[in-house]
Image (cartoon, rainbow, N blue to C red):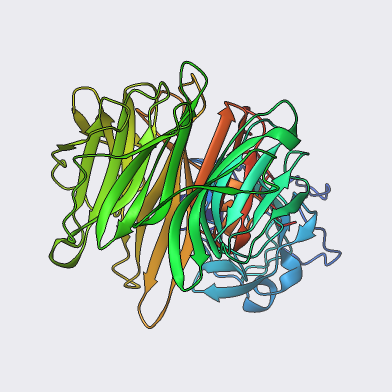
Length: 517
């Protein structure tokens, strides 16, 4: 029997290359032989085989998947395991892919020594392998490509951060001018879209800042900026709403209250005056409503005040008529979430029954004047109509990533969503939060997560940040988010991490796009 060659790839793809036609004739009567493949000057070498290679199924393999070549006749171990005879080339870099060869029975196996980037085209060349009968198999070449990435939209870019402290607030008033706060109470401002942030404000008696919202002035020097945080007054620690009218250079105390303030939502009313909702918890939760037009401050009614309920977020609708508040259970109610809505701009709230199967709520965001999303633990995303109280749970079918349990390793990956923001007047919006992988016997691995919707929150897809580890998914957890338009949004979170999306043309996943820098 004349030897034949069959090529296959394991698991994710089953690529079979068959040699189906052999040399059909040898010139007789002393005529020369028709030779193919590698040459050999040895006149006793049997005639090589003529290959006919046909790809039967898709030519895609896993990032570190073995490539196998099957032979229908025994081959010599010496020639099969000679690295010079099995060459895999990364066509993005032009470099040879390092790996190991082993011969198992009639199967030659090449195993890459490390995972290759997504969408890497590979060129494979097999040559100079001899059968035990003495025949030389022809030079054979074929191509494969590594699998597509789980997230192909890498339209976010990390931007320069002025701090390693956690980002506690983000607010941009234009593509150039924006403000951030840190947990340490420092206010930074950029006037060039985030290329450079400069320290704008820090006072010893304001040790902590939790959120910020800015409004455009005639110049950056006259921007109005609101902030919530803590203020030290002698031995007393006050919780306060602060306001700056000089672009964050100085802040005055607008009001002090009892609860620790850690959430702020502010928008301009129809007449131009700012309306702000802010809140927090100290023993009991509370939300406050501040009207800059009248200077009036009032505490909202209807907020659950039991020590079993902890306020996590409050948000005003785009027209300042409606509002949503989210809460998480404590003590005996740990893991439970509570929703409240308002139809009078946060003057009063009423509870909305939490849909079955949802967990503790950690944040929210308005889609338009009436609809919002409430976000929380274990992939909880609920669409809420704040006018009617109707709710819709968004799950895997809507593109929301769900908890994954690896029965082999024991690892469990879960998602917690914290903040949502929609571009004004647009169907495009984002959700940010964290992805945590619990690993038996090791510390948990925690990263950030970004989701985008283009249809008003009906469906979502995951996004990545260019240049970050884990093919763009290894950035720190995110807690703050602000969007000005479809093509400009900024997010930030732990360790001072900041990223911006400055174009609304998500790059398609293409060959070589994920090569390591």
